[in-house]
Amino acid sequence: MRVTGGGTAAGAPPVPDSPFADAVLERLTAAYRPAADPGRAVAMRAYMKDVAPFLGLATPVRRALSRTVTAGLPRPGEADCAAVALRCWHLPEREYHYFAVDHLRGHVRHLSSGFLPVARHLLTTVAWWDTVDLLAAHVVGPLVAADPALTADMDDWIGDDDRWLVRAALLHQLRFRERTDAARLFAHCLRRSDHPDFFVRKAIGWSLREYARTDPDAVRAFLARERGRFAPLSVREALRNIGG
Image (cartoon, rainbow, N blue to C red):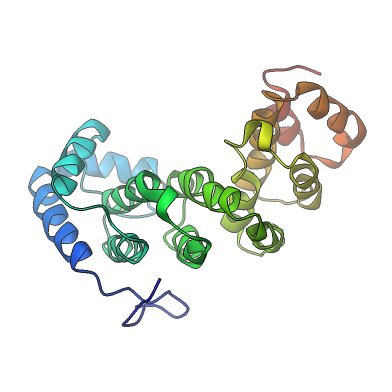
């Protein structure tokens, strides 16, 4: 993925030059802004703890508008996807970030391991669970599945000071099912078992609960051995559907 230009914040990936992204952003703002609902926007912003302003687009409306934005456009390349995502992230309203996440999910199979730094930036900028969880499971996860060398990055993320990178490392295998690296999952959970943050503790339980759909006995055995190291929240989340 060749990029030109520069990011707008220190450490931000440079935004690739992309006529495709030019077209998407022009269509996107033209579609979203007239449909804004200021009253709904206030409630949405409050629900998301003021992480960002909102236009006030209900999800069905937003997705219908998004389909008009991309209709008739060619399949984007990796640089195009990076440009769309990074430029959407530069816009303040949260719906543009949602568009970027949905766009990446739709084209993730065409992205290489070189996209991971862009994903990392999205995870740690204007970060909240509403974008982090989808990026972790539907973008980072498929990138790691396609290139197992990226597991080294997940091992780095799990030890990071940024809670959202930790959460992403915990959740990136959510959709792996039988392909889950259980040893790594358990090791990651143990490594951050004493983390004080609610969102990390919740992610530990969620990741274990999801793997329990595939191998409940392994999760029960793991918690039988290590339960005392985890916060009650993590244990409750992990055992919600299997008991123990």
